[in-house]
Image (cartoon, rainbow, N blue to C red; front, side, top):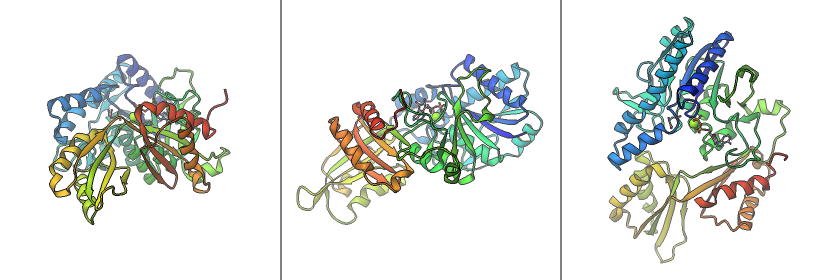
Length: 419
Ligand code: ADP
Ligand code: ASP
Ligand code: MG
């Protein structure tokens, strides 16, 4: 017998029929003799719809009230899955974020899980009950509801798995594993049987939304075994216990396997960033801090930063990227501080995309970045900004060129599946 956490994403939970299929998969795992806890997302599109309602209600919305609205999508699906399981003759109950509870800090809309009280959950599972937990939700110290940031149900699942010391955390989604790039963009993408925590972390952080970044860092820290696999399967599909999906593994486990290591593991695209430029910022100590300190205090994650060579003596342009979801707040905060910072114009562009290539192999190989620049140049794709880390190179380009860029890079790094 094993203890398994099963997580189902929005596409898997979109409507009665799909929830019935999910309930069938869960029931089968229980019948295989496992103790199971299930973490669910809201139905596909629901969270987006509610985010839009919040924006319409108040463009500069209060994140605490936003959380009240968007946490509701998962409440619906957790109740529906419990009902469906009961209709199939299983014992099941839902555990809302505040009931477990899932304790978080108070960074509304992007809260961090601090701990999960799992005693009630473990007792109910030991009694043969299937625990259904809405992902994405938490409870902050003063008692208000929080959410974990978009895609946060993955993190809920990994956190529950860590709290109950599960043998495995299976993340069921609408693709059958982690691919060399989004298989919806590149038909020749290849499925990876194994990927290391470190590479998955980097891929997720640069936009491979198959797993939320925090879920990967948490799994790495807590040593949770994570598998990504498809929920769109029939009864004859290989059981999850045979590991049909992609396993996230340590570097040592990958070394021990017979998987051949490529220079580049994967390519990711992110269209959710926006570019902000402040022109004619005074070129003096403290100017850059005056821009970024308030953004950091407001929990806005700034990514690429470029400071241009001064055109005028004593002045410089500063360009950076931040999540599109935070653009309105970013612009409002900077505009408010216009005199204190001393810039001339504030320009923003949300029609940009960040394309990143990731691979541990680039530590020991030169030329990854130059291949990227040359491949894009050959297609006439202009690079607006660049950033690098030890195992990643990212470029910012025009959003319209995203698909083309990912496709040509996938070919250039030799990742295409054989026809
Ligand atoms: P869920 O609703 O199950 O959480 P998501 O939409 O968040 O699902 O994540 C699954 C999607 O991630 C896939 O449909 C796919 O388009 C996308 N994706 C992006 N990069 C990759 C990748 N490298 N491998 C697999 N899927 C990827
Ligand atoms: N429903 C939330 C979202 O769409 C959380 C999740 O699905 O993981 O972001
Ligand atoms: Mg997701």
